[in-house]
Image 1 (cartoon, rainbow, N blue to C red):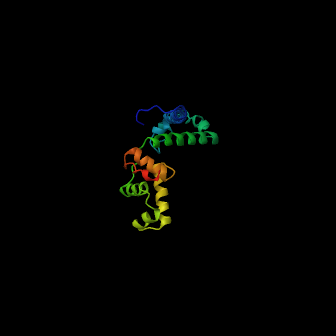
Image 2 (image 1 turned 60 degrees about the horizontal axis):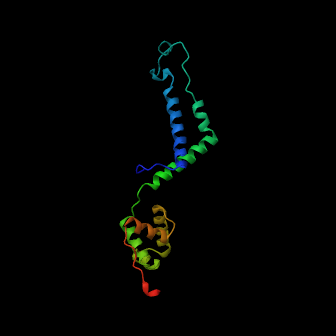
Image 3 (image 1 turned 180 degrees about the vertical axis):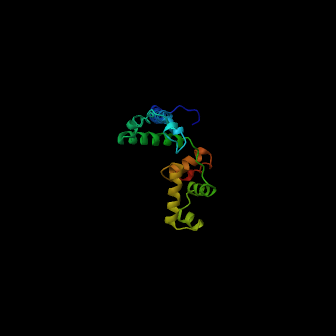
Length: 160
């Protein structure tokens, strides 16, 4: 994550996940001694004392319906934070689409050039916007320019 400190909300989410992992590690570390005994061993090998019980109560709070929901929310928030630091790069085909859109090429022409229907082209573009983490063409072109994938579109000053 580029060494950047997460914001307070994500730090809390990380702590929820860390709490779950600590509890899991503790509980698994307290496995009964009989776990190491070979299967089929008799009473003599196991011993006469009752083995300790895996402490499921360590899981109980986090695995309650509220705990599961809290853990799921925290994991989702952490995943979104991590994803926001992963650079998504458009494919060569997507770069061509971005260039065409920046040049204000009609979607119908772009679809024809890509041998698909206009509706299919809109679907492909929508999938690209989602993958790039933007909502529409304007944001997509702005991101492409910001990231240096394409040059800024020329501005037509004759319209002023």
